[in-house]
Image 1 (tube, protein in one colour):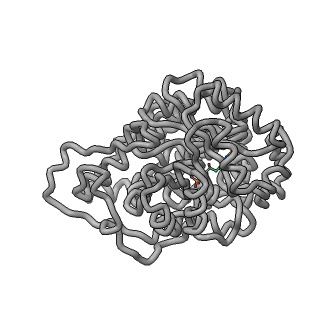
Image 2 (cartoon, rainbow, N blue to C red):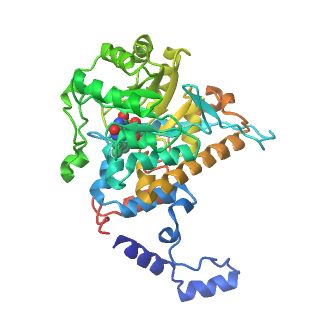
Image 3 (cartoon, rainbow, N blue to C red):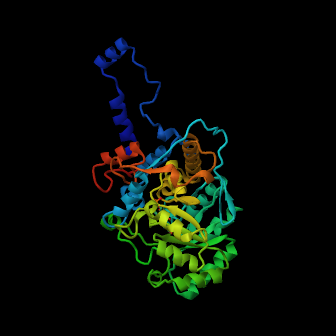
Length: 414
Ligand SMILES: Cc1cc2nc3c(=O)[nH]c(=O)nc-3n(C[C@H](O)[C@H](O)[C@H](O)COP(=O)(O)O)c2cc1C
């Protein structure tokens, strides 16, 4: 088992050599206060007690079989879009002002008139959540609402779209993949309305299924198990108008990445334009999400709210997206990591830590409300290191680098 293996090697490394111990005595070296040889002690932590986002990601890395890890963390083809999501975020630095009274910081935002305690939400993550947790979508809904935010519930949510909405009092957002003809869509939209959802999100960047080569090579059967995918390929703007009318709810268009499409989305009734490239899982060699955010915000010109996701792993990433005009920010891979690491409690803790990181960043920037954020807080900087989906977590990056095989080595035998 990898956990046992990790503990063993950590023990070996931390066993002090005689000579260095003597040298330490002489120099009055500071003694480690750690009783355990495992520096992180992840195995002993209840899911709700992770102290850092990094620990959540590390715990998931230890738990997930390599091919499942790769499915969650990988992208399409050469994974350039995947890396650009991070590179775009890393290419921006935050400015800071000092001697501002930051005892009270207002993180509140709104989405379609609903108050969110802080500007982060679980993005729609479909079949994966149900694979790592029997109540996938429902667990995420409960965790999000318990932290004062909302959640997007995917078409493939387990146990069902109805169960996720019934588990909470807040109205959630349902995300649609079109997998059938108009009769099929009517059926699902009627269920969405009846279940009490507050908005319909149509994902528009999945007309083809991106070629995720990690899944193809590892032979992972990634089938969502419902309907015919070809209907998504024929989707057009008029369908969006029809869907909004049929469901009678506000419309979110997810997967917008250009000013032109933002304009069209607004013209065709989108109340929210959601900037996303599906976490780098669809079109390869696209721009990073944050790189296109400003042009979308400009095109929406206040006529629609703007959400964004893509590569967000840290509170500082959230702050950067808010500076460029997003009103709230989604997490996809991080959600998958949190649910894998600790179920519902893991997701709630992840959101709590995200909130803590956003608050800390704003405090250190001298900002007392997210309303004060804007592009003036950002500067373009050279990117350091190699951006990747794990590069925001140095300990995880090191663990992944140690893996023998490019598809994940020998983890997951637990
Ligand atoms: C495993 C996985 C499954 C996903 N499933 C869906 C889905 O069912 N519907 C959807 O609109 N987006 C889906 N996405 C995309 C996310 O909603 C989101 O756009 C993306 O993950 C954000 O980037 P990030 O993973 O870097 O945070 C999925 C992403 C992942 C990682």
